[in-house]
Image (tube, rainbow, N blue to C red; front, side, top):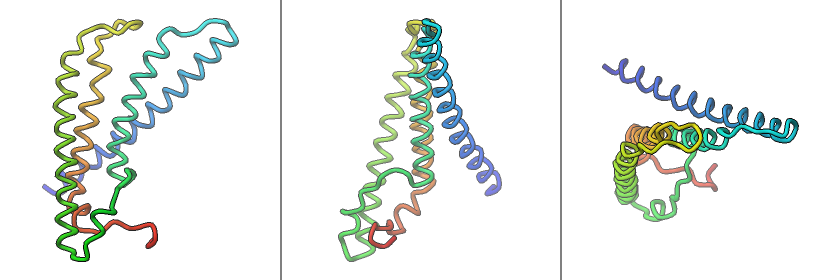
Amino acid sequence: MKKILNSVDTAIHWIEDIVSAVSLAAIVAIAAANTIDRYIFDSGFLWADELNQALLVTMAMFGSARAVRTGGHIEFSTISSLPKSKSVRIAIRSAILAIIIGFLIFLLIICYQYTTRGTILSTVLKVPRMYYYMSMPIGFALCLYEYIRNSKNKIVNDPISEGNE
């Protein structure tokens, strides 16, 4: 069972990395091609801005889950590091993590509802906007997964302070 869970975790890790990287590469390529087309050929791609906006949201959502996995999000540890007692520090970090997880669940539900109602067609490409919005609930679900996956480490281990690095 543990081997299966590790395989799923590895697949999620790869998905986060690949989607983030491909989105960034596509944004750069489309923006560069559009700029060249606009200034050299006096034309431009009408769809470039619309697609880049969707790709930017996708990159942000998958990238935020990747940042949770790698510890890339800022962590305000001042409050949780103040008490001398390790059990009090653990309790504070548990409460903070519970708030974060609750907030992510709330955002996941709201974004899922927003996505399912996105039946309006996009301006240029005439694609239902729900396809653009899909990355939001997926990204929040991945963040939730990553926080739950790392919860024991985030609660039990004291964060490294800048003075101890």
